[in-house]
Length: 292
Image 1 (cartoon, helix red, strand yellow):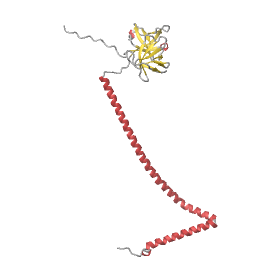
Image 2 (cartoon, rainbow, N blue to C red):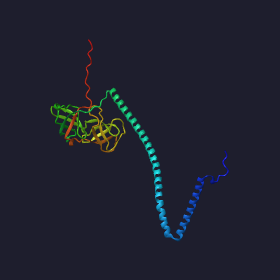
Image 3 (cartoon, rainbow, N blue to C red):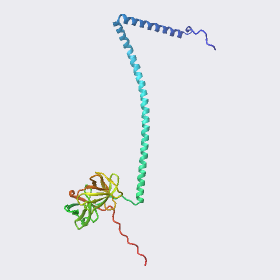
Image 4 (cartoon, rainbow, N blue to C red):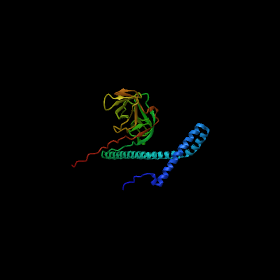
């Protein structure tokens, strides 16, 4: 059905009232604006009072609108923080999963290492202490450097056992009697100890000089550079001295052979530990008799 041609508001009483109200508001607004303009021109104090009254009316409305605007802004910020927290949570979950994977890999490698040790019949050995004894004498005036312990066979001391002090290796037992033992000190010219450098594992040999100092020589290659402060510890090679006992500290930069100081000065050591050899001597096995 086609719309009627006459679309004037007279056909709707609601439209007539709305149009009339609009005209009234428009006229009233124009009248108020004209009045405020005339008032501000001819009577500024009265205009200030009127402006204050208008401000008192409009300020609560403006405050409510501002609160609503900030509330909407806070809602948006809350959504942004929520999604940011979700992303951070996902990142932390991934990091935790990666750490768990590394932990599982390390555990697997530990188990595999343990299995290989069993297959190779290799066991970690802790050096067993035989006794605690006192160094009662030493040959400080001779080029041969020996010391005497106030412990011997009765206390379980045997020839070949290492002797160490709190700061490091002191020497090796070479003779024993009932209650005394003779120790070849580390600084004696006949003393030779296999060692390794702590910072890179370089194998070396420490030999005494007879003057209270030591010589350090590489055991694997030529043209080795030694740095001042390099520390050498026992390597366990040879089965006599347990590994990781401090032996010497390089005194000066050198190549091939370096001058070093012992970490344990025998002249300043009072009590020492006598320990069992790192690896026990192999027991001889008699060959089975062949049938006659």
